[in-house]
Amino acid sequence: MRSLRPLLLALALLPSPRASGLDAAAVEGLGAEDSEEKIAAIRALVREGDPATLGLLKALSEEALAVSGGRVLRLDGERAFDAATGAEVVPAPPDRETVTVNNRVRRELEGAMAALRLLDPDPGVRLTAARELGDADDPELAPLLERALARETQADVRSILSLIAARSNLHSPDPSVRRGAVRALASSSDRAVVGLLQGSLDAAAEPDGGVREEARASLRLVESRLAAADVAGRLFSGISLGSILLLAALGLAITYGVMGVINMAHGELLMVGAYSAYVVQEAFARFFPHATEWYPVAAIPVGFGAAFAVGIAMERTVIRLLYGRPLETLLATWGLSLVLIQCARTFFGPNNVQVPNPSWMSGGIALAAGIVLPSNRIVIIAFSLGVLAVVWILLNRTRLGLFVRAVTQNRAMAGCVGVPTGRVDAMAFGLGAGIAGLGGVALSQIANVGPEMGQGYIVDSFLVVVLGGVGQLAGAVWAALALGVASKFLEASAGAVIAKILLLGIVVVVIRKRPQGLFAPKGRTAEG
Image 1 (cartoon, rainbow, N blue to C red):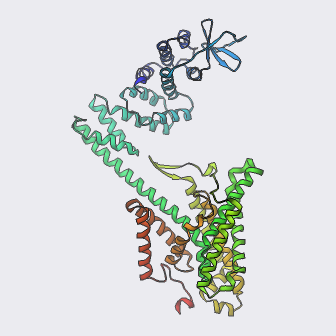
Image 2 (cartoon, rainbow, N blue to C red):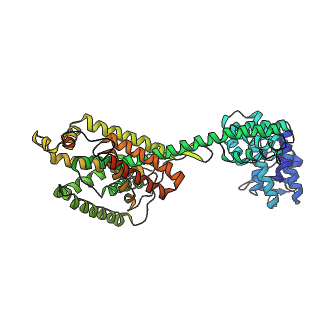
């Protein structure tokens, strides 16, 4: 940055760019053999401020300039153009010599092009140039930044330039300028600003008491804003984790509540949904390359259908034969989980597969510097709410839901009044498996997709179901959110391992005091 000071200062102090051609003498200097002459020519062209200067300097950096007969030419393939006027030279001189640049000249070029981009008419280019300046705090940048600010109309670019200007003004010899700089930094959400303001609290570094007092007030504002952003970030992470746990546990809550089956293969149903997303993504890439951005939407019904079919097959072939025998059911479903894992290894290989996010699920919303709410997790939270709404409607507004609630509350009485409990068991198990498949589709967008991916969610899923109350939809929702948010806040203070231990201890205490869970089941069975 030191080598750029004369260049940036000159650029800032000169008048606005003119619309005429480039200075022929300066352009001729770009073809000089001496590096000093090249650097002087670069600075002269930047001082001139012509819009064509940036393209010319870029050509020089790419070694697309040549010299022929004392004239500098810009090359475009086999064609040649006069570098000063832009007129094409026909025919292209065969005796031209390419202009080369050394590292010193290249550094000067990079700085010159970055400075010129701050005055580019394209807002996107100016935004990129402002971000490239980053945390620059050179006081000699201040005039350039003031000139750029005076011309800037875009709010996001002005915000970045204002903060960079404030950083630069912290080193001004004028106390009033430094006071204004620390006051401007009070609006920042950048963690690096904390260090700058703390430096201004040191009497050895900042002799003016008024500046130190202003810096102290600004520091309090920045720290409180960062603390609030941290809390918001952890809360969002907790809700995001809770939404994943909810998708993983929602189906289990239905099957466990209706049939009392401890399904140890539930995590592998998540895996089935995730691999369904992978298969759909590969199919779109091969057959519908123009629509690959929308493969997650198509993966939703495929993931549900695949997991639903696997769930029905499990219930019909194994689980139906073991009703009322919880230990045998647990062992059998654990065996089924191993079978499904081996099937995934056989068909897709033992390694994780790639399921990239589409562009509309990439990026995020920045709360503060270093704290971003990822778009894929925002979409998953919305997706979880949508699945929850559909399940609620299905259980409370449909005939199947009525049968499921009847069997959950009192299986014997439901059977006596004509409810086909066997068919309800199969449909409930298939529905729970399908919801797990939807959870797998969501997980494919934020986690590695591999044969053993479901193993990490089965314990947490059972914790959600038991803590929320067996068969209780509202209990599963609140338990998933509580576990997700508590986990993230405990991790921030105690670490991931200790947080897991503490969380398990809290769940044990809650279940000890309230065995029926947060939301007690209702009906004759519960009363009995």
